[in-house]
Length: 179
Image 1 (cartoon, rainbow, N blue to C red):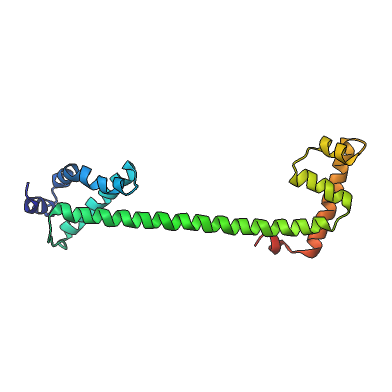
Image 2: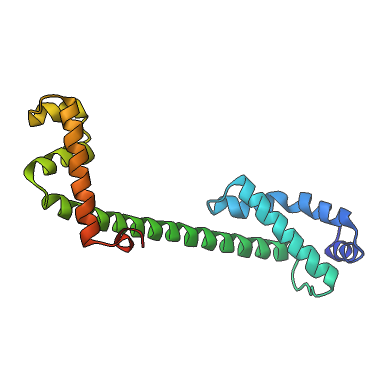
């Protein structure tokens, strides 16, 4: 079928022409995306979008073909895929920026907490560090600190945590932690 016949059929609203184009150029058009690190599904989506753009321009009468239909659709596919890659790159860099921001915030909060822990007595410093940073269980903390038993370690941790909370609240606002 000639390009002029296809274009005329589309202008009349003959959807068989769209089906014909879809089947005829599917491999060629999806190969663009596949060769540029895209998946089969992405290739299919790009090709369908390109055909829709082509169809809409042809039906509206705004399409002036200066090349073959295949060349025109090929250029639409290529542009669509470039836009998709740009979008993916933007999203990826935004995610990285967000992670860096969160990581920076976490480091700042940790610095505040560590500063306050260092102002507590030796016993509280050790108990809180063992529990929150070293991940030790209460029986292990009780052994390391020579407490009478695990309940003593729990009580000590509770009291030290209360001291830490009070110290942080006296020196910092909630905005320092939850901006």
